[in-house]
Image 1 (cartoon, rainbow, N blue to C red):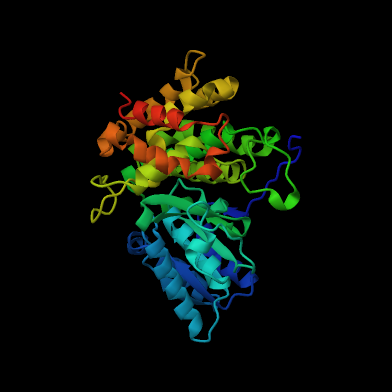
Image 2 (image 1 turned 90 degrees about the vertical axis):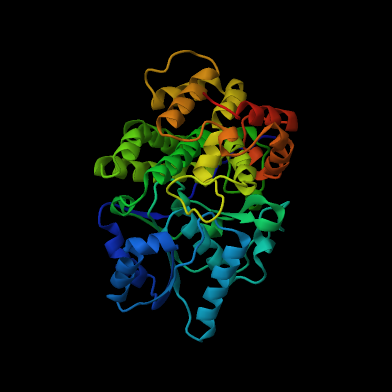
Length: 424
């Protein structure tokens, strides 16, 4: 028997220039008297967190700042943040809410802190199976207010916390409805400081969120589930489709402009809106093969560091990692839903010609090339000899692969990785 029900959930949303100035008012409405603000060193240097903390203080609310969130969080960096928060609580003065200021890394760090500050156990107890134990929280979490400073992850809208497990060299996540922020405050002014490659990479994450949720397996094609068995990623559905289509339309008119001219405020606003809309879509429908592949691509990097990112260690940013196999992945999924792949291609590029699997793949490839993203896996340090390990890492992401419109075998995934070594 097939599923007949789909679910939809979203945080409260406040959007617009100056929205972040009102965070003190919002926290006061939750009865907060002492809050933890989570950010990273780069965002801290912009002055945004200090200014936001000042607005919170003006409402008589004490703010404790943790500014060491790691770009692309690891189990070790999350444990450090969790330890800081527990120490802040151990003074006998409770934390009433958490505020995240930054990109997906800061927001995801705040989600993990919130989970482990309020619930028993260790981080790996809650990490998705088979990497972790996939336990569900048993106690209510604190109100989390997410204030993004990048346009990409959509983490302010979602139930997901992504991390690298260093010992296993794998990127995975924690997924539960309780992790979704109580309030998303999206202030496009905060994204003007976003560097060129961060804008390009994060924007590819928006694009793939929208494309993957739009081409995901239809919710009614899953087996029927009991209410307590339903997960946040329920498959493509009419409401998620609406958000994904709108996100793609905004990207079509703003992505190249935002990368070319970082001070184009209209483009920045449209990118911020696209990121949030895509998050509202994929946070319910789910993502699939490009994201599953991105986890081992990012987790096994050895010698690549892009411009505009910290240069102290190798890193493949999440959005970049997702994009690297996207063209080949959409060629593979095309025949499961041709009409959806073609509609998506023409929303992104009304002049796209043809009616086969190369149309969407070609639109994505052209965008990657125009924005200066790497020309495939070879450019970031991978070779044919790495494909077996990459496939092994991707197959651990069963939560994501289950949402693909057609189920990939290990051989299918290997062909996607091989085809992604070079795009043009």
